[in-house]
Image (cartoon, rainbow, N blue to C red; front, side, top):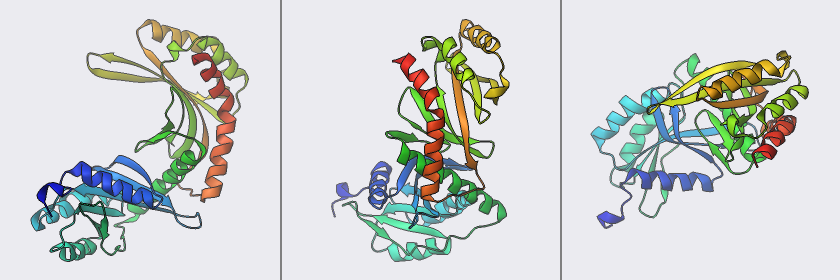
Length: 304
């Protein structure tokens, strides 16, 4: 095989592994951050028949040698497994060494994937992904709960973008899903509130139509040189705000001081120690979307 045909650059490996898992129905989050670093890809999907989340953190390397493999397993992937037990290592497929590398990875509870120049992925045997301690079990429990919410979000909404900690629609006025104090929430997120026409009247209407299940979050932000400075100024249940005038004055003052205002109104989905099935998760997500639809409509009509 000519040298220039080999997928030696990391981006090529990442792209080919991404396509491989997407063909098998996995959703993908790029550059997934975790304690101690980040993996190139996180692939996840529902197990059949829609209960239990299967996921893999995938680290991609252009080409590995025996000494480099030892370094990757010992100094990098072993740390990742503290919070992400199911780890894969994807690298350029080397037929002479693949079997030996595969067995070595299996002994470390890491799944080796070999990528050839045609984009085909050669798989070693999937190991039994062992968990080191109880804290890992808790971390994995929370991860699966979050991924169930992300998957439901992607089924309910179109044109989504996912990050390690949140997922949203690709619009100026966003529905987004994230974790807040060990609770999954769905919210309507508005950046640059000061650019929304009639924002004061919108706030008044939201307050008139709120319930005890909605929460309010307001952050002010501005750049000082190249650094972004953010400050949370309001976070509490929406119903506790009796009058809008005080809130309007606070927002107006921050705008006059040169801040951009970000506002979020959210409702709870479920706790991170809970894991629903695919159908139940999507039903909860759809109900939450309907609960927030009047808030979303108020802001989108005013921003049009």
